[in-house]
Image (tube, rainbow, N blue to C red; front, side):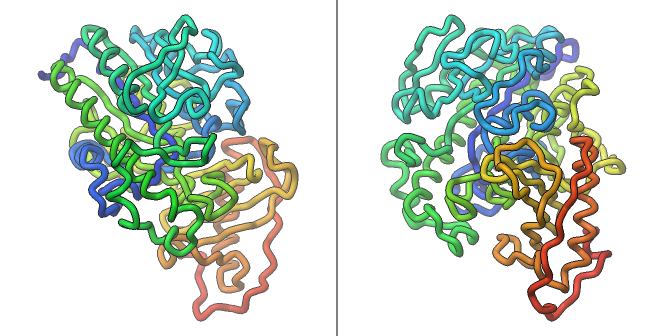
Length: 450
């Protein structure tokens, strides 16, 4: 079915939880887990360098709902509810005449079940604030719009996908915006496990381990097979949703965004799975398809989670509010790269109060010595510097190398600029002592700008 030029496109966000970018074939995973995502990325627009702006569930979700960084939303750690007056995607699409719906994990409220005033303006609701606590792999329990408990049949990924397909089917004749939020491949908290569908994790036992996990271990030996099984089922769900759109003849008039809130380092960088500056925490798979994105190719610029809300509004023809701190990626598809930042900016909380920038080549991160649950800090200490060209898996921290002091200074200035732009602050950054002898090479300030 050809797109209807008189009707704005439908929009669906397919949102996973804690999914690494290298779980997908287009990012080098050899296990064949994601044929539907890979096809979507190849035929639509693949955001190759896609990063969360806050590697923990609640803060990242506040950023994706509002287009603002966590210090602006106030949700700089878990268990801080989204402000009642926050303007979300649901408000913007609803004001433009869209039917809006939310299915799945929310993690932005103060109560369970989530009262109407804490649902971010979504018209239809079938959700739970902390789905990892209200449900299990084969016990998908959520709450409807009247806060009545609903138990959906099937494995949790399938149950939510079935609900989404039913919702789309009932609203196919009017513009709709659906946010479909899975828990998978996040761990099941109460037993610290990654429960794949029965029988699906066996083929992935000792099948392939990403190089950072091979080097560092963590919990990956016991958890990775289940994680891969969860990723496989999510991709199958993506394919089922795409099949439903095609059968309803609305696939050509529906924008579909696939992304995740953060990634997973399997207890290699700290005591749990995220909350660090490393790509294993912050780099996620992201792709668009549908009107405005078909044949968009591979976007190589650094794109943040905070850039996705303005992109969706822009693609739907809805004005992007000035309050959004991200920017639409659509100009990049037209070759307009003049004003795009050359680095992704990341705020980190809970394990630390940290800040980081990630460029095409460099990763630079600082951490505050104060309370790790603070939203921001007046001063930080240098913590990490990685040369991603030579060390893509971030196994050699160069922050104390005299040979890399010049590059650290250049990127430190870039980080301070981004902090000022986003937070309106000018913190002090204490330099790391140059305790390591000069390496065999010296990196110039010109290389630091790459």
